[in-house]
Length: 290
Image (cartoon, rainbow, N blue to C red; front, side, top):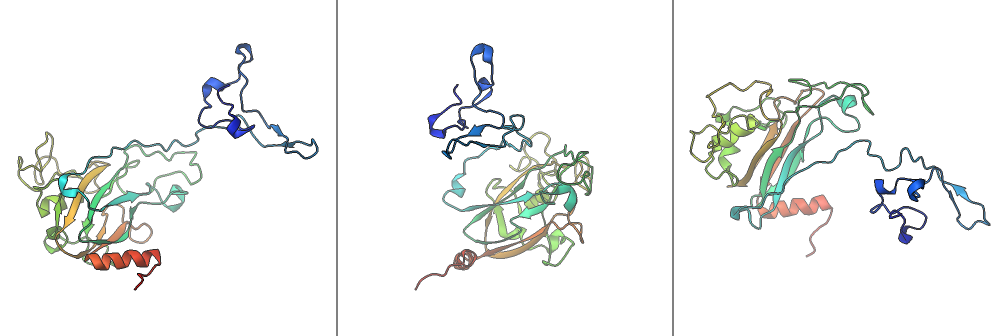
């Protein structure tokens, strides 16, 4: 059998064993996996039995495989550190999501250099299913908006302890960044795209390089965005942002930040390169030698 490999002794080869090695005596195939096998470890001929259930071996109980694409850097991104600011967790309360977590930005606190870039993006689903049996957690999908759907957005707050987003006119973050994925996007284009999870391509006119694709929807046109983002995309490509100067931005998700029991907030410190280097060393618990 191709599943037997001298390198693994009596065990089967985890890289070469597949359904072709299923036991078939008529065709002379002996499976390298046996039910509760006896193994000889040299103890005067007294074998030991392993707890091996062939009905459970090699099975995939929860297929968590994903497909993703890695896009090439643009010339403007060459050589820079790109931080990924994403969303983790799933829909539900703390017992329904167990052993996962509720929605949260990841990282939800970060200190980066003005020379670094940050890609704000996330993925989600419209087919979340936590019906009976709920597995390790309880069944159900507590949350806001249409059941079974993931949604996130990114809005600036005026302070870390706030729970309300700031009006665009009172924000400071957007005027201090530029998009390297959509270089013609204005500060308002980027802000509108992020608060709508990409439902609106931006606030600008069509054919400016921001809202060129068929179906792109500009703020104030077409069908209104649902206030719980129900008609917004579940996944968001976002923007790779470059910083014009140092800035601190506390931010939140309007749909999932549930005040007392579910918080989806974060804070990003963009500092001078020397300060960012010191923060990295502190995080690693090391000091620069003199």
